[in-house]
Length: 229
Image 1 (spheres, rainbow, N blue to C red):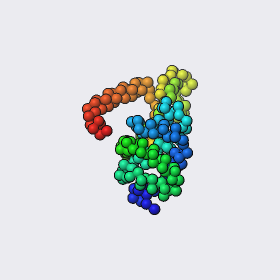
Image 2: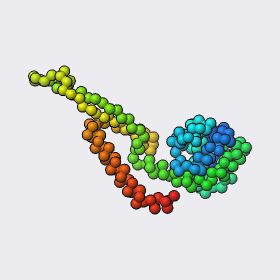
Image 3: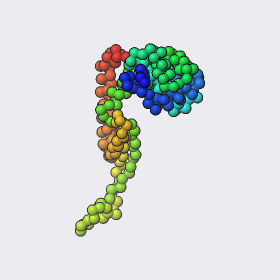
């Protein structure tokens, strides 16, 4: 069985089928919210959009919105990639065993969001390029720590000396940081380290300098970015 929407030899995944089931179970009001978001968003990041005022104020549950947007983005991507006709997409859905009334209803929605085909495809490609090769930062945990400084270490046990491991000399303010990253295959990586207050100030200064450099780079390539869009 050949599905045109998924390319040569392609077939719908369980995630795709689940998204369709979720989408078909929503009413027209929910579809209007989803369509409006797709037609107006600059970034096709459904997980980030669930907290936006328009989505939060709707009747959509976060998982309903995410599943529906992801399956529609997949359809839009295939539509653009393989230069399909709407009837070919509907044929694929019929081969998957979906009801004609659901397919016709979805067809009307796809006609409405059709202007977003190329943009949805471009954002999907942007995600691949931004997340390929190296792990991507997903989360940062930061904890402040007041570290005691004793006259001697707890270990190793000392030879004969005059220092005392119970004598408190003072404290040092520390920052503990944990970086969580994820690679293109979904594998997570963790890096934990500590900094003194001075090292934290150095890191802050370096990030500020990097932000200034990024601003210059964006200004120099603004015309190119406009042409690409």
